[in-house]
Length: 305
Image 1 (cartoon, helix red, strand yellow):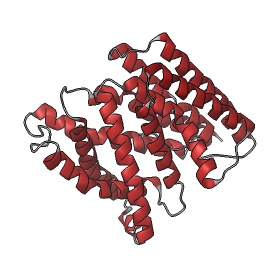
Image 2 (cartoon, rainbow, N blue to C red):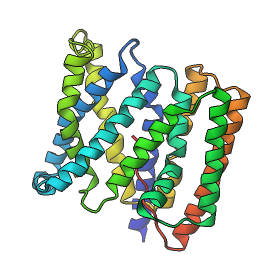
Image 3 (cartoon, helix red, strand yellow):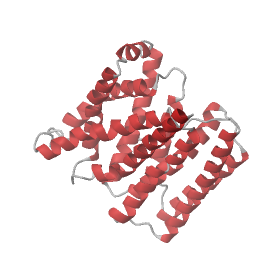
């Protein structure tokens, strides 16, 4: 029993720090001014590949990696997941570096609700009464926000849609363990990421090698990407999904606070009202999730990126 408590406590801190890192990453991506978000995307992908290979090597899982991708069907599914992850990362980096962090945070607030909607539409899953209520409230909040800004909140919708669909793809039984499947996704993303980084956006790769600080910044993007994913994986093995589901709101909350307090983004009262509506939907969803797990109907939680 004591060992179980220790593992749960350890898992909580793994999850807590993973989401805190994800919440604070805008500070990292904005460390240098005037770097194109597509250059950042290319470096993030390219330098994450060798770091993840090193992790797989340390864990001696190359045989598992080779076995996981023998099937062309699995490779095709992995390619779809890689494309969705690339879209999510690209939109996220653009929003972070172009003063749209508040709207991006909304995307990650509503991602769990988008995942529920996709489960109903694609997997024909049934919803509880409270889940229907939470989705309805969140839809009202998103529509209201779109009305106040004069257009649909495309950044939030793209982030939530791409990551919700990514989570749907990752639920397929053919998909390998998280570390292995992520390795496959990055391997597929690596070549176009390199082309994007070097040839398409900037022939100099966004200034890589021009200064030690900038070079370390690009190399460090792999650590910012891979380490919280590994911490999340360690947390998922040790703590209940309800606890992990509650922790996931740390990241968008920090992103929202950074957007308003650090980067001075505008959040007038008429928009804040609709954020509050979305948060009410999340409270309803969270309450239902806790009740669902207590009844033994456990749902999966997919990490943000």
